[in-house]
Image (cartoon, rainbow, N blue to C red):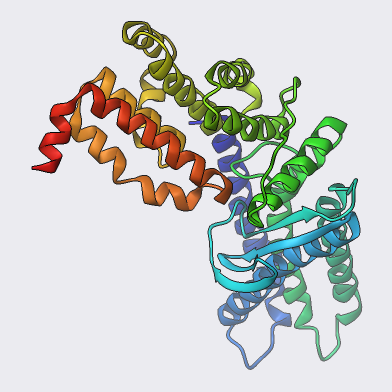
Length: 370
């Protein structure tokens, strides 16, 4: 299990423990304040649902406001899978996956030097304001006709604190939290790389060509993303020597990459090796850099880099026609997960891999035709 996943599980466990402890002590003792026309359990469930929705919607709204203040335009707002997104110049509504515990807001630079810190810090101030408002409400409603606000506000504090614990912890978890972004943005190179990444993604979204992609010597979470975008340009132009330099640099900095990114870089390395080296040399490299867990990842991963690498591994290293055909069945699903800018390049790279395999195994082509 990855460190990020372990940390995430610890945070989830703390959230659950906090909910149980507060529920069985503070909220239970506040039962005398609950409204007469509600059952205690019904009231608690209703407030939990409302508090959760207010917090997750509020979090993304604060991200939107923070983006505007920081000099960004909003590209999409995803709340619990319901996504408002820009398609061209118009807005659409649909269902999309998101990176986070409850939603995700994607942005694009509008100013020359936008400030990403406002996107992450504003929710923190919003959380502090919410807690302060709830504490004041509890203080001033005791003994009044609306004293049911006391347990209601306590539940709101609990729900918002649980979400804040996950979102503001300055550690790398299973998603990119505001707390972790705040930590990353203390380095100027990350701010520069983040904004550059957003500019490139916006050009791709609009269907514009990206002629120049900067390559960073210092590898961080965000510079790695930019270097990977540059890697695609070299792969597309079949400048495999330059592509391999980027791949090697990223592999050397394994600790600074997400484990999935690292494994996909290994897949890229194998892809380049099989296409450019003698097969025995490529097989030797595959044995050296692909332990069992990496091989398992590449064979199961639904991403274009892993699929095209596995086509070559299955076809050239393992000689398995059935595995090559199985890899092809995952392509359409992988395309949906890829950036729009990557799809055309990935289609060409996959076609190159398939052609290479079928040239070495012409009998497979005849069997397919039959």
